Image (cartoon, rainbow, N blue to C red):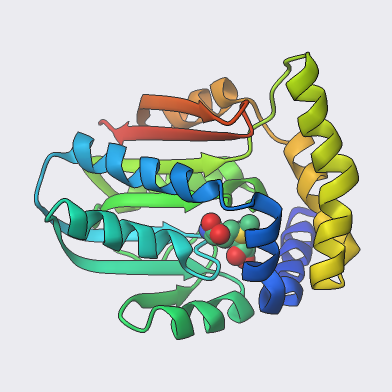
Length: 240
Ligand SMILES: C[S@@+](CC[C@H](N)C(=O)[O-])C[C@H]1O[C@@H](n2cnc3c(N)ncnc32)[C@H](O)[C@@H]1O
């Protein structure tokens, strides 16, 4: 399938599942993603070591949850953020995000073409989104364009792992046999939740991701895998 068609199909799928996305997420993740999201924000704030931040951009923001965490964790650490902007190409996801977070700004766009000036963002995050960006290297170059020198890209993603053993088998069983059915039950869209494990299998390991970021001008400063490597947090600094 052509790149453009493939990307449009993915975005359409998110439009379709948007109304049930939050409910399905809560059930499927059993809430464990909350601690991963908090860790991503806290660790980045520790690394940035400034109490004043001009702009945080959350790409592939979906219904906006990560933006909420950026704000809450900043409040806790007495960090002042001038603007939090959520960007997503799915109009249905954005509609819900705007309802949930009236105080934030939003824009409809893809990660490869962000409506932002050069070197304007202190932090650019993408949580469980980069897997869905077909032209990933192009997106990383775009991230390098909009992030300030010394600023950070923060990625949370389900990365592929090549490990064996009991917990790995359990994880594979959950992802391939249970999750698509639970997801289909809530969303009435089996295809979308079959896409999730398939897209993880077709995705990268954390080390390949780091190499790609390096090529785009980012140095990975922090990598952590959570909950038997289900999810990986990667924080990379833009260095010229
Ligand atoms: C699994 S959701 C993640 C949403 C949110 N970040 C979260 O953590 O819950 C993936 C999101 O990626 C968005 N997406 C798909 N293709 C994209 C692209 N090319 N550029 C930016 N976002 C994209 C979808 O519309 C969807 O909202």
